Amino acid sequence: MTTLAHTHHVEAGANTNFAGAEAKRVIISSDARAIMYVFAIIGVVTVAPFALLGQYFAPNVAKDLRHQSELLSQAGDQAGAVAASRRAVDVYRGLMRASAAVYAPKLAASLHDLSVRLNEAGDHAGALAAIQEAIEMRRRLAKYSPTYAESLEQSLQLLSTIESAQRGELANVKAVENTVR
Image (cartoon, rainbow, N blue to C red):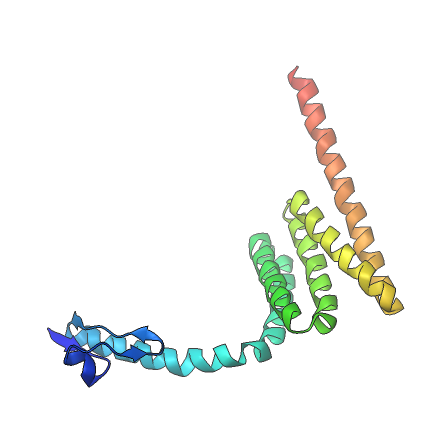
């Protein structure tokens, strides 16, 4: 076993700060030490630039997630489509903090898509919540620009479809209850 130290001061027993965290002495085997060095180098080289440029890549990531959701839905993977759509919504929510004017229409569209995916997966309550949020956003957008009226109309149509599906489910539940009695 050898001693892994981040700096020569650690080996001497002094506490040092390394990226804001206190470095400590760790005893590990030489193979594990080599693996840790590789992971540390890979982590610094790959994660640091993306952490700094995350806002630059996030819009493309969100757009790609929306497309992935569509493809997964077409392939019949409803759970995967819902997960990709949820992630796209999460990314757009984060981007809204940077520029609500730019990303509000895209978040509303992603919420609409999420509602479609949830409805396809049979989660009508989740679909209803998502489409209601999308409608609220699209109503606000339509006040400022008539170009958003068409997307608002699409969301209102989806709301009607979801509510019809919920009524159908309630009718089926009542029919089953009546049969059981």
